[in-house]
Amino acid sequence: MKKLIDLHLHLDGSLPYQTVRELLAKEGRSLPEADLRKRLSVSPDCRNLDEYLDKFNFPLSLMQTAENLRLIVRELLAELRGQGLVYAEIRFAPQKHTETLTQAEAVQAVLDGRDDFYAWQKGQEGDDLHANFLLCLMRLVGQDEANWETLRVAKEFKDQGVAGLDLAGPENEEVANRKYAPFFQQAREWGIPYTIHAGEAMGPESMREALALGTKRIGHGIRCQEDPSLVKELAEDGITLECCASSNLNTKVFDQIAEYPLRSMLGQNLRVTLNTDNMTVSVTNLPREYQLMEEQGLTKSEEKQLYLNSVRAAFASQEEKDRLLALLEK
Image 1 (cartoon, rainbow, N blue to C red):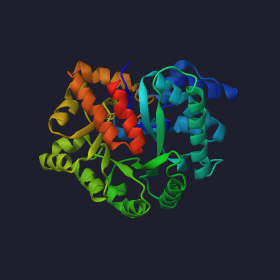
Image 2 (cartoon, helix red, strand yellow):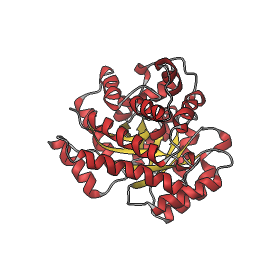
Image 3 (tube, one colour):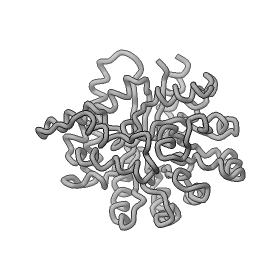
């Protein structure tokens, strides 16, 4: 089985279908399969990022108790391990899980789910999956107070399973990346690494704003291709791009998989990685993303480069990176 790393995976967009059925059954509810699919996953005629983001409302409604969060994380990690993943960074916004919990309680529940998975994993054959979490600040009007709380919680759980921060949500001028500078200045002072969504719904200017905030990783970043000078800058500065092919097709950044520039970006010496974004929303997983790229000619040596890029960019300890590099040689 191929050894895989996913650096860009949203928890609320990746609830396993079986877990959703379990959570509904616990509440004495069930939904026909077609309804479930409609609520959790996009159809091929999804129009844009905003329509894509609508699919998060239903799963979030099931993610408001510590018990549910714990179960979701345990079962998602077991599913990822079964797909060949050896390291994952899973991101979520604690402020989206506060109907009955504080942000800190939501984070603790997620970490407890990871502990449950690790305990189960001890009895399994094969390579271990290790996971860290990134806490998302939300790019939404009126969320400053909640975002400051997320930043404080990230500091509280730093090195206990929370490895960094992200900035996520709609990408438009009203919530432009530059407006979040104070949060990332504080993150730098506290030694918390971060990645920023950019170059998905908006073009190169959004990516330049993310770079001005000091990020070394960009979520998506695929629209750098519209600006050759930006491509050169990204390559020279060793900025990692967290590419998510199926997701970008869903949100109509590209119309056809044949247009997806992953291989040409590798040829431009860009530090690209391949990830899923939202497994359930996009009806995908990482083996499928690699298969899609292999059908477009991705070679074994290019796959190795993607893995090495992921190891280098991971918000993980040197000990963990050494483990991941050793796995490649097995």
